[in-house]
Amino acid sequence: MLSIPNLRLPFEAGEEAALEKARRLAHAPGAPAHIIRRAVDARHPDDIRFVYTVGLSLSPERENALCGRIPGAKAVGEEAGAPILPAGTRKLPARPVVAGFGPAGMFCALLLAERGYRPLVLERGAAMEERVAAVERFWESGSFDPDANVQFGEGGAGTFSDGKLTTRISDPRCRWVLETLVRFGAPEDILVSAKPHIGTDLLRGVVRRLRDTVIAAGGEVRFRCPVQAVSLRDGAVRSVTTPQGEIPSPLLVCALGHSARDSFAMLHALGIRMEAKPFSAGVRIEHRQADVDRALYGKNAGHPLLPPGEYQLSYREGERGVYTFCMCPGGVVVPAASADGETVVNGMSVRARDGKNANAALVVGVGPGDFGEGPLDGMRFQERLERAAFRDGFSAPVQTAGRFLKGEAGAVFGNVRPTYARGVYAADLESILPPPVCQWLRTGLRRFGQRQRGFDSEDTVLTGVETRTSSPVRILRGESLEASVAGLYPCGEGAGYAGGIVSAAVDGVRVAERILAQYAPF
Picture 1 (cartoon, rainbow, N blue to C red):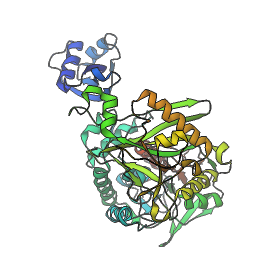
Picture 2 (tube, rainbow, N blue to C red):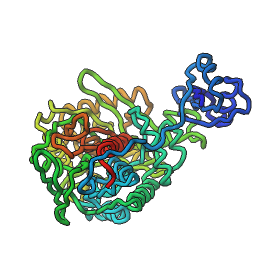
Picture 3 (cartoon, rainbow, N blue to C red):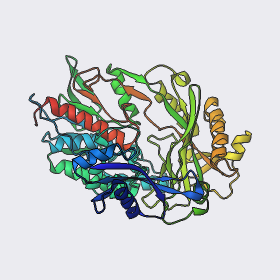
Picture 4 (cartoon, helix red, strand yellow):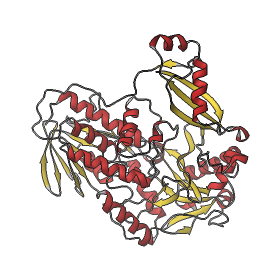
């Protein structure tokens, strides 16, 4: 296949116009063609373009001849399929255990199950159906379940977000992850969109079907069954202890998620090598989606061919930076606590992204210089901020941008109304967040307001606290992907090796490949 990138067309032109443009460039009328990638270029609101990459099916000789003539064109092979590895020969005395059923654990377990290894998945949280009911009950009444919430349960924390699939990693496994999500019911447009997303409503069904496939292939998934202890012998994993008893296994995949604080403490007490990892802290910022659309699309705002506007902004000076993250067009700010007495916020959108407000994390990088060098110091720093933000009923502190920029506590609401489900209280964010974070949040508001009209409007809503941007620890591992004891595989975002659904899933696949290469099927 010949891949032809950077085909820029007016957004109204349609995909067939992009295919025909590629055929004309290749002098190949009628050649089979398809869209590989589509992105929106809204740098000039009066001339918005869709930018396509098109694949043409040509003879190898023709492809090679055109590679030097069409800028950026290259011959590419078939899209990446499932990883193909010869099975190892070492005999497993017991089936492998996967702790956690978020993206890393799901994809690790899926690959192991479909290759005959019969993994046992231990998930501390609830199954999807029970988890959704518990989360909705919490948002409506404040009745909190420590084992079934936005952080814990089948699908991981990403289940109650937006199902965003953007990633900065370049790995052929990314394509297989996307294809697998489509296989289980995700929309096919995630294969071509430059900013793919599933939506939290559709993602739940995808996760359930993936779980059913793991079980049908010989795996097992136990819910509300956390790993409470790990037993070692001669520097290697021997067994794990759960509320259901001891489970012997020489292999433990730790796909714990970024909020498994008790698990981090347990591994640290066991002597597993880990270190504090930088992360980010700040607030959720809310605007009206219509205002975001106007700022990005100008006169074209609201056009049915354009997706809801989304932004990604950043500014850095020296060792510190402020940026927006996990932008949810047409979404809401959600209560995301994983323990009583703590207030945490996140953003969530459904597939349609049709809510009145847009929200994003507006966060500042923090590191050991802010909270200490100890392996668990960043985790304790998170806890302090979340406890400082807490009020009875899990209400959240809120301040409008105009008052925050002037150093005045409280909020004066205008066109933007907070969407946080447990209610908000007027606050002074400086009494909750550290001075460097507040200073840089102000810097970000002012600078981003110069780049995107209305970003720093007086009635822009800031809701705190956003602290679960990534894991505060990294569990150290070597080239074998094992930790400081044999058979223990730290994996995914919680272990400090990923930053989103796709990168976490890819890390889970990499760990599964290591197991496949060493051991025979169980």
